[in-house]
Image (cartoon, rainbow, N blue to C red; front, side, top):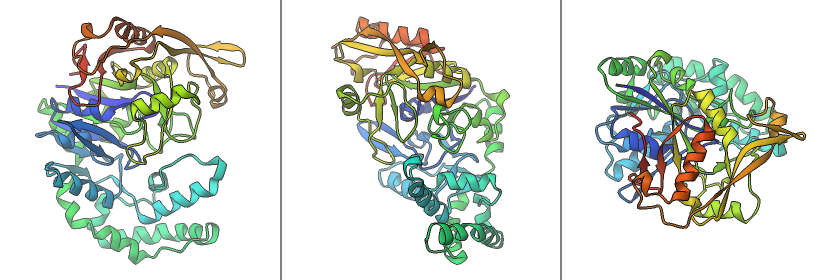
Length: 427
């Protein structure tokens, strides 16, 4: 049975939660391998809407084991708030596993994230202020706190003391904020230790054994390709590897065990936060996509920037991730648009560029080259077969498939779990 990586092909919010949930009923493990509670998935099951931030979408599928991998940074208070909220709604969270090597978001990380972003002013990145970036920075600087440290108070205290020697200098002398004390940080973290203990596991060992048994493991990427810290629109990116390669480093499963890479791509494009976005619309079309598509952040509530489909971005995602299948979401949002523009290339400094520009400067100055496709007016919400889609909708999907670098295997025609047209099996 396969190990499948599922990633976002644009700037996030493509509908990965729905795709993960749809696959989840056929897999034994769903693994979140990067990011933290700085992004969310919205999943609709039997008319009930669930907003997930830190938990893998597999938490909603009975029989599936949800896993938080070592590549995730965990805000423990958010984790347990989310678990409590789902439990109150009848969702069983007892099978959740958390990697002992995952890093923990400390209170001073949240404080630093907010004050640094304010300090940057017009040069801000557009972070969520939840401490994700500073926690990853601590990880790379080797002053981070891991889940396993919560079970040795002496080690935890030593690590917090070491971290605060630097953090308090910044907070007090640079940002004019109150210093944090070792006791208050340690007390906040230890308050969660005993509840967390039964969930903690050697995730790499657990997943390796699952694959040896022939079970299917789905790796769920947070954020998306163009927000990857290495391959995204740097510096307007997240602090982790959201591309398919991150599934290996963020879980301990080697690349030789990955069988398939599924990328989720929206039938148009959106982005949250700062950074270049060639097809962005600042007119009534952008407002229409935002309104009809419900384009507001699951975690932050921020309105998303909206634009037309960008084929060079999709091709880039296909190449970087090794995409075997695309899942095209929100096709229904385009219903009623007479002529639908699709960006097929860019114009940069007067020259046509068919792929992502080499430099950030080039991408910033890129202007979309559009081709136009006839739209449709028919309601798609009840369609379940590709041949039942309106002919113009079929033509639009086939055109995107031809120019995007991989086959389109499933198509979202509404927010609910069953509102999906399957062309090819993803397993």
